[in-house]
Length: 134
Image (tube, rainbow, N blue to C red):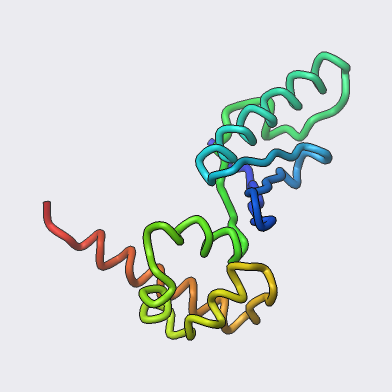
């Protein structure tokens, strides 16, 4: 099963997603889960309409595919803001709370080194959670 990248950003009020392989296929949602549902429906609608109109579509959409979500730092920080406080994210990532607020609000964009710190901190947390015995 091939993966289709869906890029997700946060606009300050909503999440916005688009599939780069399908020009013009976008969707929004108030929550990350709502946006994922909406973009899944939008992609299916777009592909069905393109096929009905005889428009070309990428080969990946002619078979089974899986959506893979790529979140901007703003989208990631906002999607987990009800799970983690900025203080907790600061401890996990090593980035101060004020800077995390700027990233979450879209007022500033993290440099590659900062994006790496966010990614590494969250991956470490995920690995720790996966190590918990049930």
